[in-house]
Amino acid sequence: MIRITDTVTIPDDEVAFTASRSSGPGGQHVNTTDSRVTLLFDVAASPSLTRHQKEMVTRSLAGRIDKRGVLRVSSQTSRSQKSNKESAIARFVELMRRALTPVTPRKDTAVPRSARRKRLVRKRHTAERKRQRRTPGMDE
Image (cartoon, rainbow, N blue to C red; front, side, top):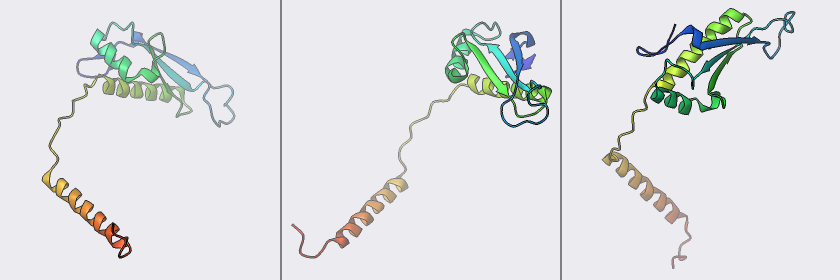
């Protein structure tokens, strides 16, 4: 079981892993070792998520979800497939946690008096500076 939040857990059988060759510089084993791990999670068909949660995840992670509703999380930071798998799971948990956290709406507040005063002082200062740049007698 992968624990996302206190109320949401994803069973291991809903998550699939694929291994492929990592990009970038390698060494002796660069062309033989499949160390990149991609975690695949079918958001659309998941029985662990409610309809509302699926919508939140789909909206929040739209760039990582393909047309079939499958979320992809890859990791290739390590040369070890095992540590890349752990890293992909950790990133998956973090992405899902952020996606499932509701955004609190911003409360409109009044502009503070001090901010208004500073803005007006700055305006007066700028106007005075421009007035001083004018040549005498050019006033219309």
